[in-house]
Length: 387
Image 1 (cartoon, one colour):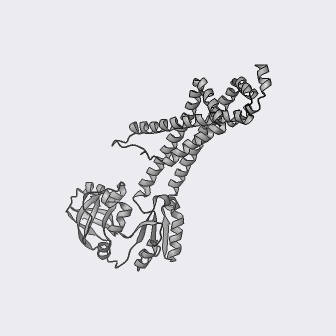
Image 2: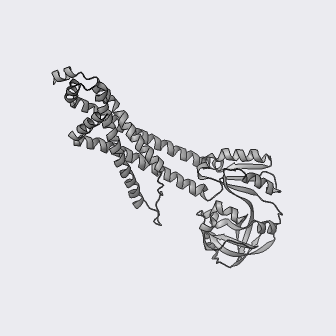
Image 3: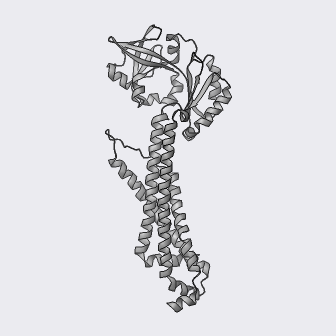
C-alpha cells in the first residue's frame, strides 16, 4: 500500500494542472451541495420557527358544545407525564372587546399559567417593555395593539365580555411575538383572572403542548399517544402537522428538489473524475507496463488509481467545504431584509457538512474504480511493444 501511495502521489504531481482541475471539480460539487443544502435547511428551520417555534405543537381541546374542559387538573397531569413533552400549559381563551377613548376593538383574552407558558411562548424574551402580570386583573398587550390605541405601561383599560359585563385591567407590559395578527388581538393575563371575569369557574379551553425540537416532525405520533393516554372522547388532540398540511407539503417539495439537485451535481462530479482518470490510465500505460514488468501485481496497479481518487476526494472535499461556507456567508451579506437582518438565517449543520465531505471522498474513490480495473488489465509486454 505504501508503494501504491507513493506512485499515486508522483502521478498526481507530474500533471499538476490535471490534478488541480479534478480537485476543483470536486470542490465545486461539494460547495454547491453545502450551499444549497444548508440554505434549504436554514429556510425550513426559519419557517418552522416562525410557524411553531413560539407556539404549541400539540393542542388538546374540548369538542363539546360548551368548548370548555372541567376537572382539567387530572387530565393536565396525565398529559405532563408524557416524557416527550418539553412544556405544557392550560389555557382559557375568550373573545371580548376593549374600550378606550370611546373606541371599541375586538380582542381575545388569553388566560395562561405564566410560569408554564414561558417555555412555550418565551414571553420574557419577547416582552420588550414592562413585566409579567403577577396580580389579578393585570395584562400584557401586543405591540400592534399598543401602537394602534396609543397605550402605555400603567394605563387602565376596560374589557367587555360577550355577556356585557365590564372589568378594569392594568397594563403591566407589552410583548412582540413576531406575528401581527397575534400582536393585535391577544390580551394576556393569568388564568385565574380570566376564569373569574368571564364567570367560567375552574374550567379551561385547552392544554397547549411544546415538543423537543428533534420531535417536531413526530407531532402526529405523539398526539396519538396523548389521545390514547387520556382516553376521553370529549377531547380533540390536534398537532401542528395536521393544522399546517400545506406548509409540510411545501417543505417536502423543497427537500426533494434540493436532494435532486445535489444528486445530479454529485453524478456529474463522479463522471468527470472517472473520465479524466480513465484518460490518465492511457497516458500512464507505458509506466504501468514497466512497473508490471518489474513485478508489480495487478492489484497494486489498481490501488494506484484508487488512491488517486481518494486523495483527490480529500483535497476537493476540503476546498469545497471552504468554498461552500464562503458562498453562504457572502450570500447573507447582500441578501438582507429592510431591517438589515438576513433573508435566510444561516444554520450550520456540522453533521450535514461532514456527510457531504465523506460522500465526496467516497464518490471520488468509486469514480476511480473503472480506471483501476482498466489498469489491472494492461499487459506489460503488449504495452511496451506498442509504445
